[in-house]
Length: 539
Image 1 (cartoon, one colour):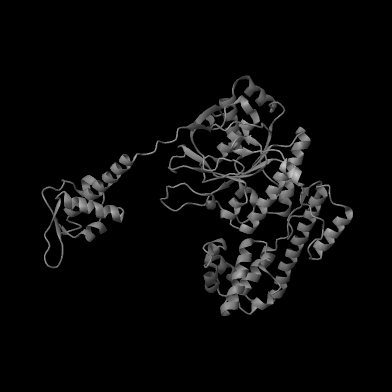
Image 2: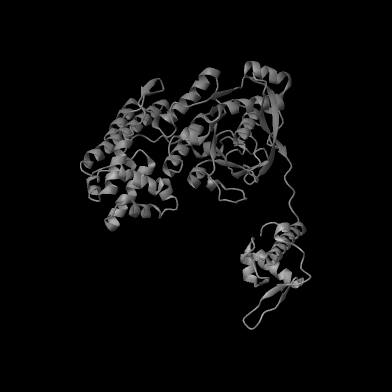
């Protein structure tokens, strides 16, 4: 089934052919009956619309070639060879659902042809989209365009003249110096990835950046990064438009204030500069029409205001992408499309993205490779900034924002600490307070001295030692005579700290060896502290 049409560049084009039902039938039949694999030989993994279906198809064919088996258990084992392969394919549950969704593998060739037909339609659609892009650059002749479309539709590689920008030695050596919107943080052109876990304040940082670039030197620099080139912005707030609205109002009233804030709230302009907001996209960026829609929004901005935006924000990628965020191929293509747009229109594209969930108990700063999409996504962006809050339970607690990757003199490795300030904006019709948080710079926590760290270690060892004493005094857990291994087993804490705690107990004379020829056994002495489980907490 073909989805409703979408308007693009003044014409209507169909959304991509999907054929998900036929894809599921094909995969289900192959999982049910190995004899169905040869009947689907016309297909390749790239013919599937859903990336996870392509992964499963590749695993089924691999399993068939290696063992002749295609059942969910065997195919799952093939997928599991890749650390994220089985998870990204939907797990064993998805394989079982696919197999249980078909009754027989008979007639599967017809379904395979349907999948192939949808794939060919999508390929032709992409060819037409590329043709439209070539029309837009103003350098392609009618003959070039006809040849490009004909060759693309026939399945060959388009033979068209190179569109690469060639510059002479003199032109290359005398090109303009690299320029900043915000010195050391935001370049005038390129792509920037801003990542963080949920509720770390990514939108607050973006709102801060945009408004400081909008107002220029009328407001204080962001963490000592002064604005060099004030500009307008286009903000695609697809995830939380009301929240963006409140945060923007809070920034203007608290950071700008006075007559300038009143003027901006009335007119929406500062020296001809402005911010336009979009709360939804009619096409996902993973679809052939999505990138064209984004370009059209940029051109519409130019038509409306007489100039291009200096910054375009996509908030968030998970909302705007519309496909599997772990599909490295699709995300890589998206990153390259965004880089092309940034270069063509000479602007900065900021993409807000989520990090993967960290391991339980982790309390260290994440790296750019922990973005959803991994290093492929981060590697294709010019700059990467990350946010991190050490205490996830305090949603208004301080955060650290740091540059994990920068180019052309960017602040790679630079970090800033930000606290939240609540700004009251008024009351609603029920009399409830309306407000929003904004970020304020805060001092970096002082580094602990070696003496302080050593003192903390000793305190922790002493605490563990007292817990061991409490274990020895508990008649429910021991008979008052215990060896060191038993004491460690019955006491929580790191193994090394527990061994150090036992040594401390021995050196302080809290325990004495009452062992015999069978080995060491230890018993509490009168010197041991008078602690118990009820006094010291659970061991």
